[in-house]
Image 1: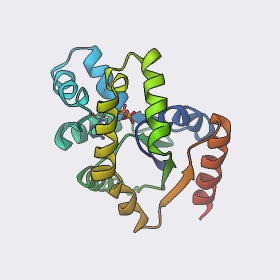
Image 2: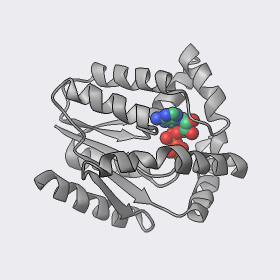
Image 3: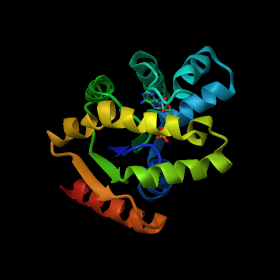
Image 4: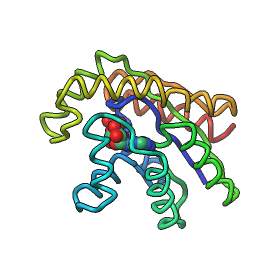
Length: 193
Ligand code: ADP
């Protein structure tokens, strides 16, 4: 199996690139943000709880997030692998993911991080808000909060996989195809390693 983590700050292009990667590597794309938004759309208790955090640009508690992620993985056992997008965002989430994969004699193949500077991110998200309808994209102070959470809590997840020599960073600024080419290159290299 190939188990990829697509990593990087909000607005770095993970969702866009995941769509292309799914086609090339035939993997199941699991985005915790999309799962939460679907729960919110269906007005489930989980969605209502998640919304209160997402609206502030804060992280949804680990217990809730990990439970939802595990359920999605368990519902889809017959796949060639997974692309995790927006997960793990904390060390406990990374540890839970490692343990879950290990229980099936699997592991993370590679974490690929998209590197994009803050000002470019703010620009992209404010622009995305015009079409996404996402209220967490429409307000600059919420975007800045998401960026601080990323730096304070999430960025160290890359270090967790770096210790296992699994972290690769690519420049996330450029055209969609250009960035995709960079990602595919490091993923292909990590697959033969
Ligand atoms: P972005 O990467 O642009 O921030 P996402 O769709 O990945 O967009 O996430 C939107 C929001 O969903 C986050 O700000 C957070 O509130 C919540 N969320 C998504 N994934 C997680 C996670 N793994 N842990 C906790 N909260 C999460």
